[in-house]
Image (cartoon, rainbow, N blue to C red; front, top):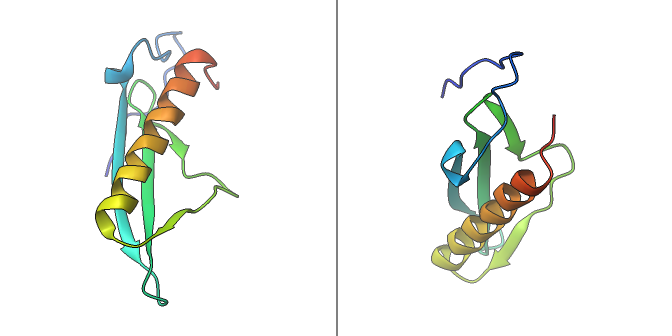
Amino acid sequence: MIFPKARDDGTSRAASRQDYEVYATYRRTTEGAFVGLLKVVRKTDGRLLFPFAGAPDIGPFENGQAAREAAQRYGENVVDGDLDNPEA
């Protein structure tokens, strides 16, 4: 994936949920459980908001659908948090 480069002209602030891309999926662990995988990108400047160093695991869950749904919800919380308190 290619994301736009950061801009220094002050227009990189996100104004709505449409300014983010949330990619939610899952993987199966060696123990047979399912863990949600998540990537959240602020499209206005291409900044990767999640995952970050030390990011928590999402799960485990008993099936892939539950893991994906949990990852999607977590991503929506990340977006809401960034809209409320933008990280530079």
